[in-house]
Length: 327
Ligand SMILES: [Zn+2]
Image (cartoon, rainbow, N blue to C red):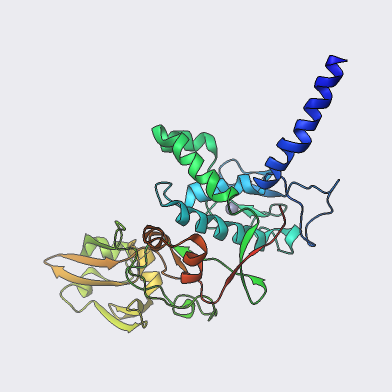
C-alpha cells in the first residue's frame, strides 16, 4: 500500500506541479486553429530544420529551435529585453514559413520548414557548438537565451492581422532604412526611424582601407585600376533619404550601392571615401542593410529601460505583439 501511495503521490505531483510548470514554461503548447489537432489537449509544436552543415533534416521542438536562433543571431551579452525582442522576431520568422501555420516551408530544401544557413533563413547553432563558442560564459548565456524564448512563448509580431517579415540588421548607424530603398517593395511596417541607440556598437562607424588594385580585383576587374585613381573612378549618383548610397558610378559603369557593398565587403552602403596615393579609405556608418530592427539599437533601447514590446514597436511601424498559440 505504501508503494501504491507513493505512486499515486508521484502521479499527483506530476499532474498538479510538474505539468503546469511545463505548460507555463511553454514546453508543451496547445495549438491555435491552424496547428495540428491536440492529443489529450496538449501538443508539442515541432519544426523541421534543415541542418546545412550535416545536410539532413532534424525535427525539434519549436522553442528549442528558437533558442539556437537567438544564440546564433545575437550576442548573448545583450540586455535581456533585447534578447526577448530577437526571440519574438525569430518566432515570427519561423511561423511564417512553417507549413502547419500556413507557410510554404523551405524553398531550397523540400521537406524542411526552415534552414540553418542565414542565406536561406535565419542562423542557428546547437548547444554543443555553443559550449565551444561561449566557453566559460556557457551557463550564464544559456540561461539568458532560454529565458528570452520561454518568457515570450507563443508571441509573434503581427501587422493588419498577418505575421510580418521581421527583417533586422546589426547596426543602423543613426537611422534605419525604408524597405523600398534596399529592395523594391514598399512595406508599411518597414519604415525608416531615427535610431540614436546603437552608438555603442563597434560597427557604428568603421574604416576600411584597400589599394586601388585590390578594389579593381574585388570589382571583378570590370573596371581598370587606372580609371579608379584620383577621383575619376567613383561618383555617387543617388543616395536614399537616410544617406545610404543607392547607385554609384564606378569607372564608367553604374552599380547598385548594395552590389558595390557586397563586392568590396563594406559593412553597409552608408559610406564616404578618400584617396590616399594608390589606396582608398572608406568610412562606413552602421552594419547591414539597415531595414527593420537594429540589433544594437534594440540593446541600446533596453539599456534605456524599454521592454521588448516597446523595442519591437519602435523598429516595426504599427505592429502588434500577439499570441499565435496558447500555452
Ligand atoms: Zn539551406
